[in-house]
Length: 560
Image (cartoon, rainbow, N blue to C red; front, side, top):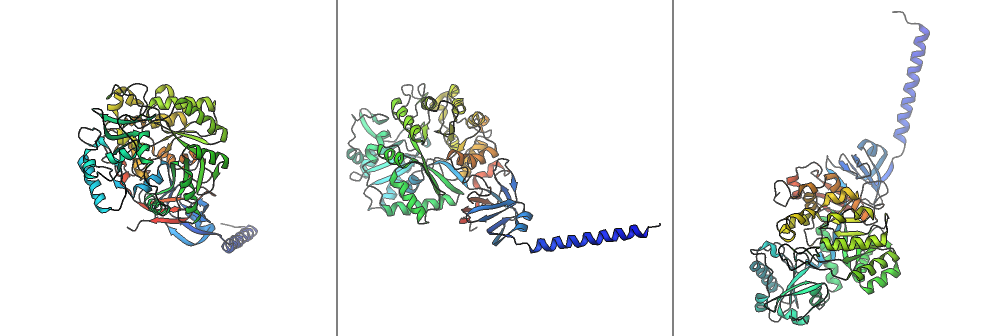
């Protein structure tokens, strides 16, 4: 075949020119300095939970924030760091946020009798006795976590055995939900409680006209207010122990509901001392003293602490029949529960929250409480808004009231494990029709477009994967029932992950700081060997955390 010499010359000229230019580009590229990071993680499955729910492979962290997110080639090619971590296919998520806890109460609970899971009153007594024998210097015996629904007969306990064992030492044992307590006669006497004692939003349980030792809701305060205050050193030690437990299950932020100024300032001091690394969204206890202080001080937010809301208690709990219902309890036709304050009090609080720009976050369990507070919110909020007022728990919501969440931009803040903890007995309280309107997580999400997920620990366990499992499977720790509890209200895995990351951050006005893995946000991460987005649902509760990272710092690493 004949080739024109001139064409041949042009071909080789073009070839060599192209080769030289390519070589120069490679040389220049190799010589271009990479952007310096503190640490690079690569070769993983990274759920960014950004607006597109993108999955990436690698990320770079600088000064406690995400510097870059992309493919392994992009990050390793454009960035350098003294520490490079090969994830070897591990899964990565934004740091888990628990949208409703009692973190300080959990810390305090590490110093009291653990009654969670006690299967009988006799077991409760034995645990209390063991604690008392090992802590002879305690002026009070305190415990938490009993649940009479786990006992044969499901009846409230009485104080006789406590009186016999501890005639001179006050005893206060709080129910799992914090809305009822068992005390002995010594504690009743200290609290000035008799069979004639009455108060708004609480009750003293009587039997044959005599006190049984069981106090419900506001009645508990008559005794608990007499307990000697925890010392500052005791509180610091307990909080640091509590955060270590939380790190081990992947929590990087918690919403702590119902705090006084003293505890909030202790958090700030521990943050400043670099001892408390857990990020806190604090709901303030609405005492007059706290309102005067924080309304004057105004909203506060930094990378570690947000103070812009008050925790209001609308009613009690379903387990102790303190939840306010529109119609009587199915298993106690003479009871409907009760609101913990008057409607006028709630209206006054709502007006004050609105005036001073604070979120109103109200505990509402029963359908009457939910209706009352939703209507009060509606009167203040008027319509769509960006004030992000919240209903905490939203446990039983009448169908006529569900749409109010969307109409007034009210955020439902729910706890999936409440559904799977209560499902054994909730229908006894509510009946076969009303139970269908309880724990309606997916229904609330569908009309609202967002739902914040939490645990309410120490009412439930601290592990957020328990809540993730309950949300997507609607089953207990034994993966019962087979078909799931009211399975039509399960959440997808994507929705559940958003509920414990970006939606929880949004409910806190913190979505620009955290909740997703995006450039500029705080570098809070959870790394796991297994992927909760694809792992068989039966295994979700048992999956271990590999690392928990806050602001780029590894605060927990599985020793394996």
